[in-house]
Image (cartoon, rainbow, N blue to C red; front, side, top):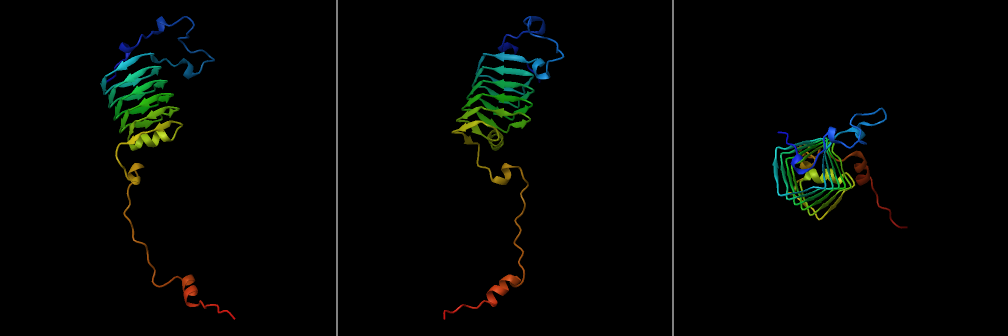
Length: 193
């Protein structure tokens, strides 16, 4: 289900764009400069529950999101910059090709989220509850993570999703290896003269 977030912002369509804003790519413009985003800027969004929401090609900037619950949502090819997330819940969300930078997450909960080519850089995570995947992914980049809690204790093999191998008993050879035989059985104490 694709839901537009236009009710939260005053968006301009290409025919309403300012005269100095190019609506068509030029020879010297890069794809990032000419990318069109749905812009949600300087907005305050409180107490919403989004379920199965797909956000694609949007720019969230300088916005405050408080007590928002995102359940099974997808953020695809979007940007989140300089936003404040306070007491938000992100459960079973998928981040694909989404850039998150300079955002502050306070008291948020991340549960079973998937991060696919979606860097989170220079953001702060304070008093958040993080599952093992989110903690591993966030710690890879230059983020500030303070006073956060783990969802539950996870054994190390499960943290990295490695298949657990059965413990094999050590192979014991009969007798001593040659080097030990020579040491123990040919050893003679040196007596002082």
